[in-house]
Image (tube, helix red, strand yellow):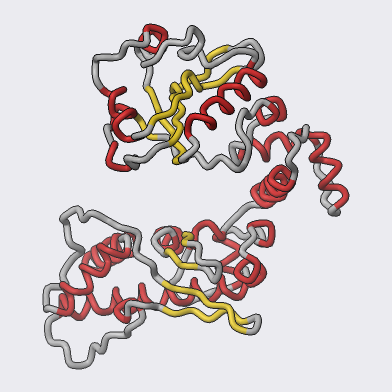
Length: 344
């Protein structure tokens, strides 16, 4: 009884393994060292469990690493530790493939379109009722599904856990689609009207909650957006992290922002400076030292974290002027650290 309980605990840990660590465990087992999961912490990169392809309306899965689909034979194994390890591996491989095939069937419309609005609401409990499998229970499903990453027919990498959504999240995806489809900033009643035209009837309060669920700004904040969709800023980088190797040594514009919004004449914003440079990496790296000359910026970043986003452009000087002009139109004034014309 004690050995059985220990085995269940070990198997639970195996189900929780990211794929990289799980593959290491398989290698240990096949080399006769299969008593327990490896204890060392591994640098885990996102390993793809399966690649999905669409052919004539059918979704076909391909599992690139054969170790994730193999069934290891037990009849010739004398070492009990290795035998148990192979049983755990076989069971996890069976569970993984069952989950994948079931979600391919249930979420077929999503796989074909690549659009989140075509997902069907599904909970872990509902999955087990629709697609039962021997020994697969709620706890094991929850532990395993978050470790399964797949490449969709539209060449996006997603986690299978993201296919388990609530009705509220599905509504949020519909709200997001309406917001993204319109150049103008729609108010929540406007969004409600557009959704009604599509046959989806939601209250304004529900639409507001859906926006917050996906971190979609409110109408006023979207209306005050100072640059168009043709400007592709990078993701924010914390200056304190000094990851300047991620920034190209090319010309472009950049935006400095704080970790909290500050007040402007029109709206509130995190942005405090908009600049341009022939060498983005060199210029942005200069903000990490103690030699800042912009007195306004020094005051603003005191006791706060500074972030940067950038956009590569050969026309960086013209683009900088355009961004500053649009910011002033939308917020009623220039960014705080630009206001008196100081250069950092």
